[in-house]
Image (tube, rainbow, N blue to C red; front, side, top):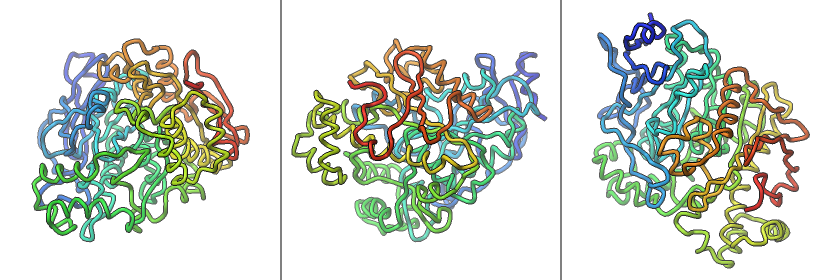
Length: 496
């Protein structure tokens, strides 16, 4: 029996009973918070590189006040480390989650939002302060945030281990929600899964898997489009890491390698690139078991048709990766032309981009093209494919420009607005101290309403292609161009 509701009124710490044991949380800002609850056993020792397994049950009340251990990782490389704070919590029980819930007790049947963090499948955790779930709980939504295995531990491809282990972790967390969330006041039949960047890519893959059916009713994709690699294309990063370590590219061999040495080799192999320019990275894999089809193809042909979908991008995604390190200045006209050839961008399209952005540098033009090609275009085309599907589809764009380091409406900037955490110093690293609270009120409310009733407050996608723009001033509804016009449009958020 849960006593979430009785606890705050009586001045006692809240408790909730899970299927593995009872947890004790805390009351913060009027809501009950439980942190570091294990949803699977520690993936170490004999469990390393294996599918997640249930945690051992415990007796008594397990303390759930502090964030649990985070998956092994290295900080973002400078200068991104100052813009994207990424706390690390030591320990082996990485597979844990957190719950923020209104102080209402079990049986309330509240909507639930499960957050899957981003970070290129290499960084991030549920302990990032920007993801504080207090505002969602304040507004009647149970917020669950999840840790999962990262890098080679979670997404390395081996002949002797299951692929997509990080994705299997996410599924195990969603199954935990199904089995336990009623004790925290949530309704397991009203679950929305949401994520940004690699979290959104993960959710797109989950939408395409049979095993995820029934685990969530709605999904939010923020700045991440459906994507996956074939095994042949995916195994190169793992092989390069094994080669640096001087061991075979097998799970058995890497399981004997010290975690710190493995992280060092992983960082050496994957450093120097970014999600737009590429380089060695970890990706979701079409493994033929968990994921049998490319997620984009699956979703375009009816997979998860009954799941309501909210998705969108930021106007200047590329500026997070291009601007702080000076990449925009280092891209010459020659490098731009070579990139256009690589992307297969017609000359007419390139001329249109230049005409729409007469003052843009070659680096800024490349960034705008890459943002459209890799994020905005795929998501709008997915919305087109779902226009007649049973589930409703809603599209947004975030266009408020950050004044910090000329970042503009860059990747990840919307997170503090969605979570209504603008006042936190870690959020201000991207937004600066004067981000508009009224815009956070509007964006956060849209996510609450979508999780609650499946309607964020603007028309669903149809032949007119409506997009809600969260830009300077009040949100406004705009219409996206057709696909044949897409690559040359004027940015929703206005030219910078």
